[in-house]
Length: 428
Image (cartoon, rainbow, N blue to C red; front, side):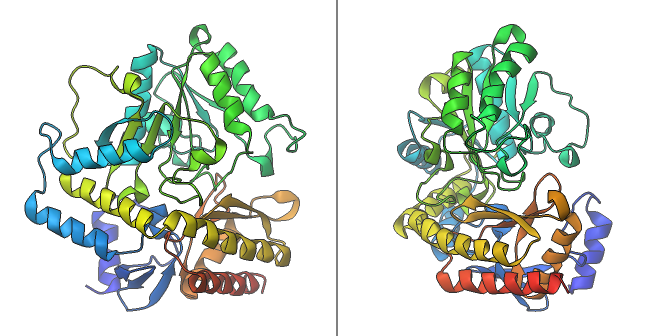
């Protein structure tokens, strides 16, 4: 089918809420490495990777071969049966995750992984209340939407009881009007009053947070933030659930998992997206005592699927063998230096933030007013010039730049050149 026919069928047969980027949606035909190609053959440098999901390049040969080989051997059985790829992946996660995390439960998505984590925390603590952060995004189920704190993504009223949102560490737009470090981490310490005033008997099941908020616009907390807030959470009997759906597998540079930059150990950690280089998978890992508290019948029909588990293990092997955690740090520094230079050149860029290959640019007008329309126009310009980036933030005014972890310096420089051209055109 040609582009028009595909878009015609998309409009007719898919839910109308299935949103796409750009005024004229990009219709992708194939991809290889860090490039994608539309149905008309135009090449695009991919600096968003399916929302931080293509970790080691499109159609990575090692990952693809592992998928093919496993598909020919055993494609599916469900969690009612044991299989080697599932236990191999679980063992690998136990080996590389921080602290005492050891036992895993596999699902299909980050939404399911977060659902599992919250349920597990509630069972272990025998408490219902969960605290999470404003500007967060946790998925699209009833619970995950209730956990999420962006009104544009919450399609129904909050129907899940016991979910509480507190201000996050959004230093560029501090909810308390303070400035770091003289703020004395007011955003972290505020959780104690929230527990004392909004929960049942001043107890909580868990605090759930992303090390760096993804959909929220790559918001990065101060270095002391998690030690401060997790310390308070523990004081009131809660577990720390670390949502690594976007930050895992070296994305933040220098560390395999994002939370390792903050020096705290989660009780539960969740994964998805880049875990299997685009193959659908979710995982929840917990300490043994927390994991073992979940008793009774539970099943995931497609969780632990031998093909998806094989893809995940192959992806992690590529990350390790090609030293992509370090590459994310080095290339991330190069990218950040270039983005900072653009900020000095273009006043519309109000803030540059992120870590490793997870960098964001917040676009603003006068008095820091979010420039949503400018962001949309910038996206159109980068597409025209052959570069794909993402956008996010509660106001839709943050460009998200997140190439695959095996990106090289020439590709970084090419992306920066296109961004420079696009920002220049934006002002014309």
